[in-house]
Amino acid sequence: MVDPLIVLRCDQRVYRCPPLMDIVLHMLNGYLLASKAYLHCHLKETADFDRQSQTVSNLGVPGGPDTPEVTREELKNALLSAQDSAAVQILLEVCLPTSEEQQLGANTESLLKSIRGPVPGKSKQGSLGPRARGNVEDGEPEGGLLSDLREVQCLICCLLHQMFIADPNIAKLVHFQGYPQALLPLTVAGIPSIHICLDFIPELLAQPQLEKQIFAIQLLSYLCTHVMGTLLTVLTRAKRFSFFMPILPCLVAFCQAFPPLYDDVAALLVQVGQVCASDVATKARDIDPLIARLQYLKEKPQAVVAPGGGSSKLTLPQRTAEELGGTDPDVQLCYCVEATFMDIISSTLHGL
Image (cartoon, rainbow, N blue to C red):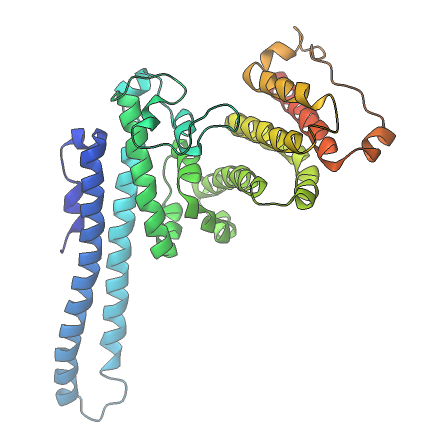
């Protein structure tokens, strides 16, 4: 109970065996809770004894018995926070691919495909089960290194989500400590409760260390993209138009400042286009070709730019101001999505 992190001092092969890792995570969670209960009881027992001794020795001295109590409580909370943050940091380190997995092509961004789920209309799979995650996109055989890593990452993200909900201060402490930037796409997409980081990002940006300021900006960029994808599923039709029309141009700046965000932004734009096109499929004849063009832009961005950095090979339908103003809001949003896609591709490829 004194050292709950002893659970994680196991053979490294356990970290790539999902069934065993699931057991280890349950044990770790139980040990952390037991440690909290043990320290609480220990503090209460020793406090009662010290209070009696202090009352006898310092009878009549105001405030004497209460001073050690405050110090004990602070020390207990500090110890518990240190235990929780250390456990989170170890688990985040486990999520990093090993050298062997890196040689097989593993990276945290590609592993997100198993967490986000399939794109509507692209796959008939529903929620990804433990073994289904091993066969996403790459056709990898079940039980391979990358499928095991994906499953372990999902298990760890689930535990971290529960820990952040139980105590939001853990999330703040962990992000003030920092962790590898390569894990940001994984944590933002795999931990639903990570949106609470938006509350303390200004404080993180105010830190004097340059590394923490860089980490805060990188975290914010991934959070913004992820929040937009979440809002797409909950906003009404009218609010969707009011929300996305002014922010779509901002995605161009996102991709210019953070090129690794290109895949996430491209997936978001395709998803926005699909949602809007499904609402106006019977109102405009060129909406269905638009979805095909968006998929083509996402998969082959280099193919749409002419050699030598010239104009795009893929010509967009020209829309007059009167035509756009008189069309359905979802149709306008579809055109804006396609224009944003072309701006991102142009700015990204020309900046290389």
